[in-house]
Amino acid sequence: MDDPPSIPLPLGRDRRDDLSPHLRDARPEAIYAHVPFCRHKCHYCDFYSLVDQRDRQPAFVDRLLREADRLKELTRLDGVETIFVGGGTPTLLDPPLLARTLRSIRSLATRPPQEFTVEANPETVTAEVAQTLRDSGVDRVSMGCQSFHPDHLKTLERWHDPACVPIAVDHLRNAGIQRVSLDLIFGIPGSTLEDWLGDLETALALDPAHLSCYGLVFEPATPLVEKRRLGTIAPIDEDLEAEMFEATRERLVAAGFEQYEISNWAKPGERCRHNLVYWRNGDWLGLGPAAAGHLRGVRYRQVPRLEEWLDSTPPAPVVDLERAEPSVQRGERWMMGLRLRDGMPRDVVESLLEDDPARRLVVKRHLEAGRLEWRDERLRISDGALVVADLVVSDLVVPDGVVPDGVVPDGAVPDGVRPDETLNP
Ligand code: SF4
Image (cartoon, rainbow, N blue to C red):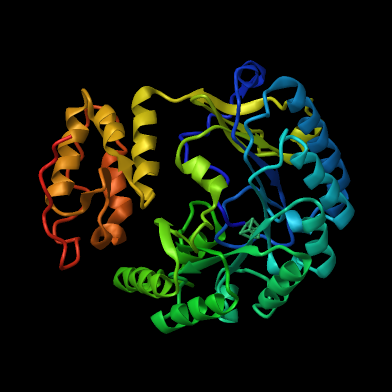
């Protein structure tokens, strides 16, 4: 899996709720459908996925289609502009089931979507699967490569052979899908800067329209964390990881990509419109087990257990449905707005800082330190501080009235970053 299906939320209470009243008032602009099957569980992965379960595929698809039909009755779908089918590994579905799934999800949009993306793992993209995707209306594929080095894939317990990737890309292009995004991970234990630069070159040679380059995260309760605890692997040095991040920027800018989000790079016109809905806090429906959604300030997640989800009547009883407190909503807007390289418009910053002296002080401090900057009337993280972006953002994602005590350490900004104007919003 690769593109994030949702933003991080304070979820986890697992309380049952009825989504229907929220669907009646909604007009989502995006649809996310979650296919929870994988051939194998990668050791860094904390997404909801189950190893294969081929025998469950027909029941899963039947249930998903019933959910799609029910949603047509319950909510307005004339605003849907993007569709993203992720997982898991959607391309693991048998082609006839994959076709049924994609056509049904696509039929939710009352007019042709601007973008229809499916996630894929390279070893699953045969010529038949590629043609099925295209014939079902898919125009963009996001493929999880992670690394082209077999030993680093092994560290991640990622099972595909790197040689599958160019073959899969060829199949997609031959089928008529030109918009291919590749996912890569840097900072894998044991990797060097040269390894990472080599991965970037191999990816660029495939002429992708979009690249997602994430630093490896040790997610709680994953086998990777256990290996770290046992000492069988060790995280790479922080300075080396920062070097990899900087080298990524340098190389991808030279190759004609724009960094439109901290971890995402696009050729002109190739930004992922669907993920922008998440990052701009738009409204989207989530279908399938464990899928998250957001409708008019209400966030929810479907039950993250396949059997329970299969037995439920659509729309599924959702878990963790909640309307975020205004302070939490503000924190989320900071988090997502500052991850985007376009930054946040001055009027939005002004409205967020109104009656919020604690955050105003934080913003002022980061402006003075050169970590934030105004550019074209938008507030954004400065280029030189991107490497500490998560720390800057976490300074702002705090409950109202709490003044963070200097999460970003002094001296964390590389040379060349000068203090900016004082904040004057
Ligand atoms: S392919 Fe690996 S990383 Fe992707 S969802 Fe499956 S287990 Fe997780």
